[in-house]
Length: 156
Image (tube, rainbow, N blue to C red; front, side):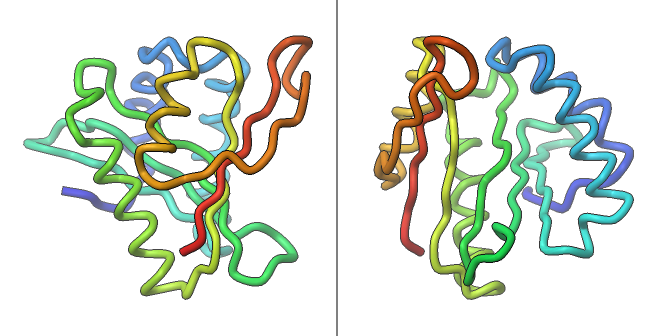
């Protein structure tokens, strides 16, 4: 089942993201801050956090928000799936939920996703391409020397 994230999920979601070994330590710290801010105020400002849960176990989550100063353009900030659940459809279900929510509830026009260019992100980039996202931009050396930002987009 996909449901809204609640404050009690924060520790488990941070641990889930950390255990994937995909995110940098600074990103794990940022995730906790993002979730704390979401529960404090951002949930009321077109930010959304959802979790995929089965039999009381969190399998993955996604976080998305309206891009400021745009007309119905959205950004997927986070999507993560438990390491032992990857390649089993959980990420696809989360992404499809986000897209459906944006189309039907928010009349979203476009969704952008940013990721890194390092080799360990190749499965992530392949996941986005598999789900109909096109690579729209490459910002060289954005995160660090040799680690560029890869921007994907999909018209909704």
